[in-house]
Image 1: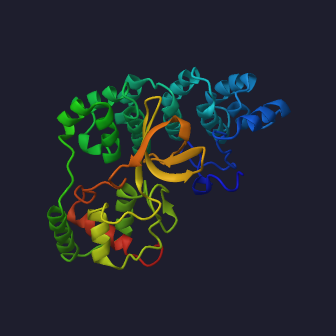
Image 2: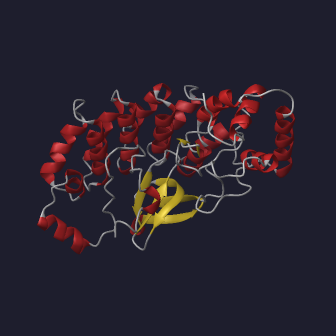
Image 3: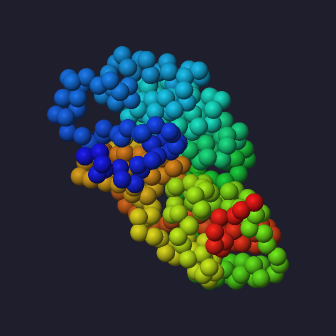
Length: 350
């Protein structure tokens, strides 16, 4: 059973944070008879015991996740497990971790809070000081519920968070939860026309032919603009496709896919929008599914398991997780350097 499910999330847990230990898959969707038998038999693994709602283990786990002297891997495993325990009061314990000094713990807590009512104002106030990955996790969390979306919208409208830094995927969820307020900030939903995109493709092509470039500088731009989602030569994230095997010497095709990410969405990377019966809005790739559950991998890198019985609606979002206008924030030299690195035939050697 465990070898056949979660095949796309084998090395990354629900928190989206890599750990050294073997991950324990969610128990959501297992037959109630099997879960009952596991409880009666007793389980020595603390992460599984938490998922089985063992009261003593859950009480101990709440202390461990707040203990900065405990091993980081153990804290991360238990944060993930507590997020899946059927105990609504655990949201308070997880909410306290958003002020932790370790950025991986903070991100894990933000992702774990998806199932709970997060301390929205506290999280929104922290966003400007968070690292880029945790910012995305925080924005994704606040936008996932109607009662927490206003805190994120207020942060943007006050100018404390640049509206351009809010991912398109997050804006789509805000439009569901607070359409009028979202429209005031980002306007009506609009996609670039084919003609507008061709103008941008021509602009970038002209830049690429206008000067010298350095792949060594380009890797810095890649890490800033692309590595959160994509891997190249074993460096980067695992949200979008690994670019290493792409035909990266085909410049026209590269330009088309970067400028217009919706032109061709690879199989397995269709962006879905899921609304649940408890009021959440989730989005991301369909990482896995069976008759009982679906697994959505979102822009924050986390894989969230949702029982089908809890899904109110699930449909293609109509756009790629990769944002339009990715190159607009780069100057001409950064653009040339980025493409020099993207078109490298092999890893750079220093």
